[in-house]
Amino acid sequence: MHFINRCAVNPMVLKNGQRRLSLIVATIAVILCWAYSPIGIRIGLKSYDSGQLALMRFLIASVFLLMIAFFKRIALPRLKDLPWLLMLGLFAVTLHHIALNTGQRGISAGASSVLAQCTPIFSAVIARFYLNESITAWRWGCIFIGMVGAIIVIMGDGDIMHVNMHGLLILLAALSWSIYFVLQKRYSQHYSILTIVCYTVWSGTLLLSFYFPGLLVQIRHAPARVNIAVVLLGIFPSALAYLWWAYVLTQTEVNRATTTLYLIPPVTMTIAVLLLHEKTSVMVILGGGIIIGSVLALNAEKKIKACRMKPG
Image (cartoon, rainbow, N blue to C red):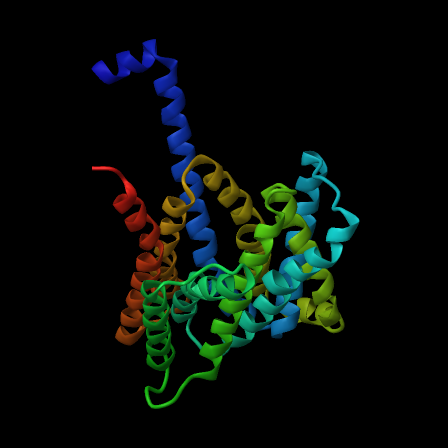
């Protein structure tokens, strides 16, 4: 009762409470959307080829973002930025999703979501050579341990005596996303997050248009359940999740926000059990724990340094 009275006399408390609630809801929405992505891909691959599935998904996302961009009136790109924006689409959409879809033909949705957590590991290596960022022995150790975890996941999802090549394609998708993540930093000061997302999706969809022949036939022959799953893929993980994620990043620290994304693999595994009746092996869970642990240790280095530099 005392808390209610305080809120009544102090609108700032109410406002902060609403902001926190909005942040929590947006974060949960992002986790659910991106956790659904491997599930939707798995369902979509029952009727679509890898390329056509990626194109169908991002045609839907492109139209959805076009409507949002019309109302938000996003900035036009500078002419000199067009080749680089096309590169963003190549790595974030075209290469990433072709590798992801092809890889998921032979690997479980749970293992796929775990291997996707390797993105920060690849980003650290790419930043070393592209941005000339130094990598300490600690970071190299984290990268090595993370790769060991990835190997455990790949081997644990199939025949333990053989390396699953489909798992390597998921790693290629994570590498492609890492390249995009490093490249997009170049434009973070010139364009808003919404603007970058829009041009990335549109340019990637343009490159995927290579797979348009045969798409209409696959749409007609796909069951309604599959087409609904693909539509959900286009709207939620490919469009809305990015907008919600942009909101989350404006309301909290980046490191704190990205930590919540490690909830995606267990949520994906849970959904996979319910919708696909898919079981996750112990080795995949073990390897996933190693990957996430190495990424957390990788991100913890800056905090440790900051603490050491504080006086007293």
